[in-house]
Image 1 (spheres, helix red, strand yellow):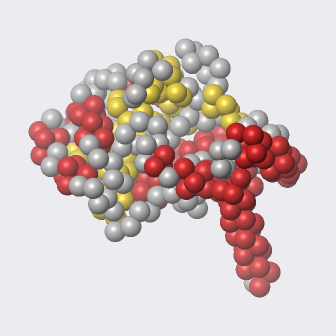
Image 2 (cartoon, one colour):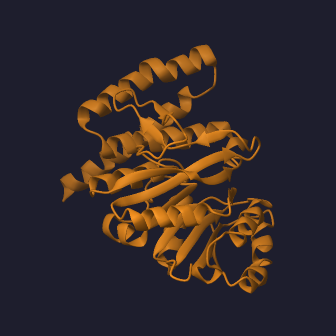
Length: 302
């Protein structure tokens, strides 16, 4: 294992409580050369004491041979910008993008690194993600999007290596050379959601493939912070989903998805399921249209 490449593990923290400590402990126990791991925690203005808890671990992490770097933001800049800050200050040949509520299996990082070394045409790799609440329940094995309805669904068969549309940004490994070619996360996605899908689709457009490796295991807390305010969560989801669709899909797919989402799917959720998604969808759609018109007006002025 002496020749394993250096890896930078990057995750943001915003009022994560004790979960960043659980994440750091699992990183400390990874079956990977300790002096080849750099951990970068980007704190998004936490006020719950979690930043101080992370700082208290710095000497403990250093004693294992790993390096822990902490970046402090004065405001919550969101997931994409925080990760990009970490990437800009990283030294690893591989970048592992994750969340503060992830727990690594001890062999997970090694499995993904070995796969990317063996298959250099792979631009992004992810593993099997289980629920922290129900440790045997698979909650992510790569995702697909129906390009006509906009529906997102898990890729079938979580026990085989495959190529989904995207792997979740809570646990994805990317060679830095790929990021140098396609760019980092798009910071125009607000706070959270779809910046990982956008990165994967850009990697595909650049000629790389996406890989799901089922033998690499992780456990995820599943949006605990966002679930505290469901209206805000739904707004961020639809705001970024609409932006992703407009940015990345052909015009016929865009029109099809927006019509089906508005008249059928979101309306059904609002009237039948009564899950209060209709207003967040409208707000997210309005935000995108407003910004598109602003961009067009600026171009016309030039």
